[in-house]
Image (cartoon, rainbow, N blue to C red; front, side, top):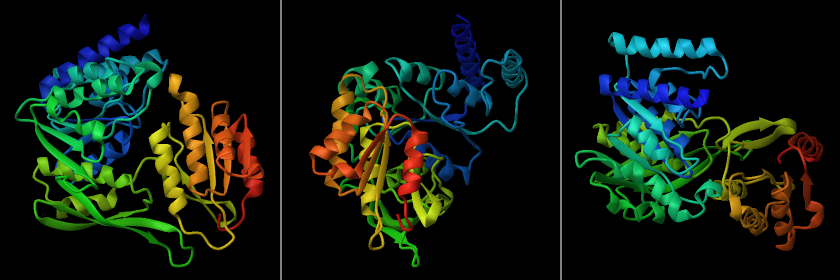
Length: 391
């Protein structure tokens, strides 16, 4: 009951703040790629505008209003903390804050049906970004069609003088292009995208041979500009960078300026980040909440890294949550992909991931190259003992 009242008050205050300050809202949603795209978009826009974007993963009915109010840390169960939040909001409404951001870059999550309509009602968008539609939260949405219906609200609510930024590489995104009145800008790696990345190279360290970044070319309306992303190894993060450049074009930021800004683009922790490991090993940290599509992408990134002779690739995979009836099949598909890609060793954590382990073994990964654990601490100790330099 108290939470319901809290959410109602936050919604009321956030809507009034949006109405008063008339900041542009760039709204981002999708099954995957939301957070990285949010970071890239904010990075590109920040060079020329005052910008605020979601703190951490504040993308729901509580987090999004907190971002609009300007609160970086949720008060949780602190009554005094919530009083301070409401005082901050009322100050914004009673007097004008000249430093309030010109643009709000807001990631909008959908855990259940109705979430996106609720969030865009609070913060109607000038630019709606649809990153990718795939199986995620199917426990609550049941079918991919229902997921698509929810996500496309980010562009269907736009007016004719506003902008829809769509991932050209995802068929389920492009199938929804006719639901919007807005001007459409597409991005992707496939031929036909308005902003297209080509000539992608993974740059490596001369001594270790490990990746240190990506470079590629972006074409848009006849212009070709090189872009460098330091510290990134995952090619799917190029899509997030392209989303940033696409939104930049809406605000008059050319590719050269946008590309230079992206030199400061870094994904948040847990989003395919490179971390030096013990014994001169390399860790690819993709520990943020996941679903089948990003797990496959992470495995492909792992498989593409060049290793010294004798070194091994380890995939350490825990349960993917909120997949409902898809849980067993989704985990089995991941196990099959581990074997197909030639990953040397699979470690799983959790009950659902036992299906990953079984499928990998059935597909040819030898039993003594698979280990399953109930908890991550035990799995970590096992991995620590197994690792050698260069793994």
